[in-house]
Length: 413
Image 1 (spheres, rainbow, N blue to C red):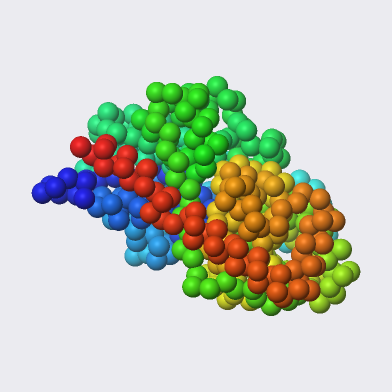
Image 2 (spheres, rainbow, N blue to C red):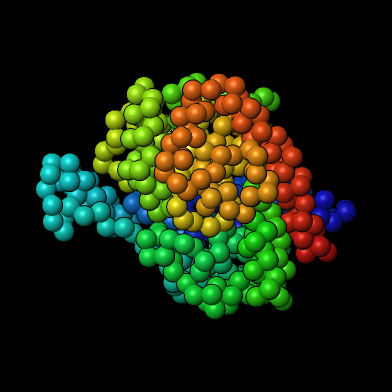
């Protein structure tokens, strides 16, 4: 417990990402940290000071895992049971325009009116005076400790009822070092800007050691905490079925670009060698593609991934850029799956996954690995066992969040 004989301390999470459940890597990681907060005897709350988190979604339906928060408020949205509803007319206008543009593309039209206009990256948009005023009120009585979801939310700490409360930033990524550059879907910042933002809190929670090392070197007054995403391993490896591949990802630039590379450079070779091979693509990444190659199914957001993971013979992760520990890599390890991935995918986990994942950036070699695993059930089972062992040995909740929980308890004294 945080304090013997005292009421539990409140921890407020300040976030501007669209959080409805563990539907993508960053959401899953934040929810896991919130669970660690709760399991350590604290009371987690979630406040979201910008209505832009809704994007084009008029209704946000909360999944059961959101119950980890004792309270949850979003500025400008109305909560009705397990749903947040936006009354803003411009959201509905944006939905209508997007539907018209999508229909135009499918019918073969072109022009500015058919283009999909990306919304601003809500996590990094400038804070408004209304955001600050709302946060000051919404966090009242909930902020013995403050945790900013991404460094961009650290600005809100100054608006808390007591801006001197112990604070931390959930780093997620080292933004200035992202290899996607202008192709990426997130804000572009310089190293100097990133250092300035990271210095706004007492501690920074990094998902992998290399990013924590950057904080320790360049933001020495801020404590660097390594907290990898924890895994919940299955009871036994799942070698799955031959001729069945799986990719899971959200609609972000690293996933979209990586999957397009796989479609163009890798998938034709796999299909030539294994004509019956299929690829299931689960998650919102499918929204980025109007069509898919033969043998590929774009499934969209899937409520229960268990059947897909169970049946998949090989899980692929063809990322060509991105930073941070890749959450879907940890998930696939914990599911006991044979995995073929690029070096970007295992970045930050090279030692832990050395013998547990087939890694290559060469398209021909990537295809060869998949085909070999597809044709050799014994090799597939062995790699699946190695993956599960890696998850058990390196990514238990106790080992992943020990330093984070220790910081919470010391901050609450």
